Length: 55
Image (cartoon, rainbow, N blue to C red; front, side, top):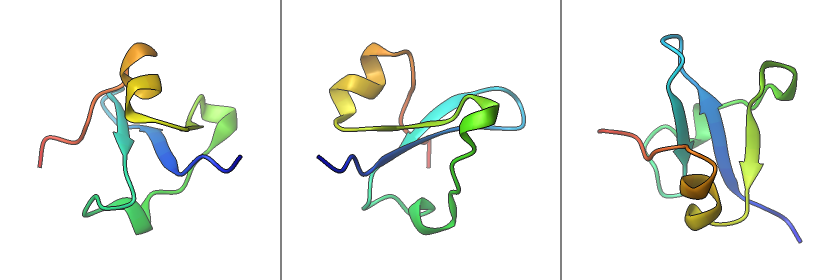
């Protein structure tokens, strides 16, 4: 199964997830060494403590 939701960590340390329809989705690059990861659903991302982008 391919998981398409990108979870990245902002410069301020905020954990933000981006769905394919998100404005910045294409520019987000996941760095697993920095703790960033992919999610299979928004529910999974929220349960792990990540939030949707504010814009």
